[in-house]
Image 1 (tube, rainbow, N blue to C red):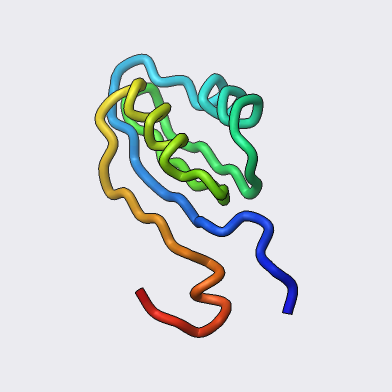
Image 2 (cartoon, rainbow, N blue to C red):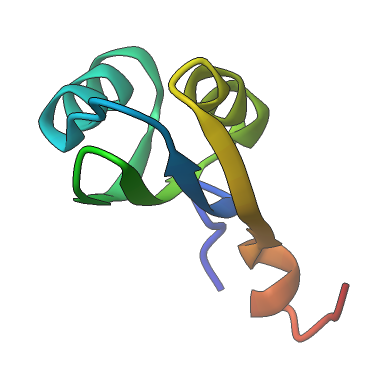
Length: 85
């Protein structure tokens, strides 16, 4: 089995004011390494999904935009090997 290039499936919600999904998408694309980026929502609530090896950096950035919650970080390598937790 091939190794997973980006190990952590990172998902969260950002609640704030004047949020811009295009600006968030561009910032993450330009500043973080990963794939499968999805940034959807409106100016008060954004759902973010991203595969990366450094989820903490994404969380730190998102925290500067507003309140972050419903944070889920899944280790896809463990999942691929059939392990839990």
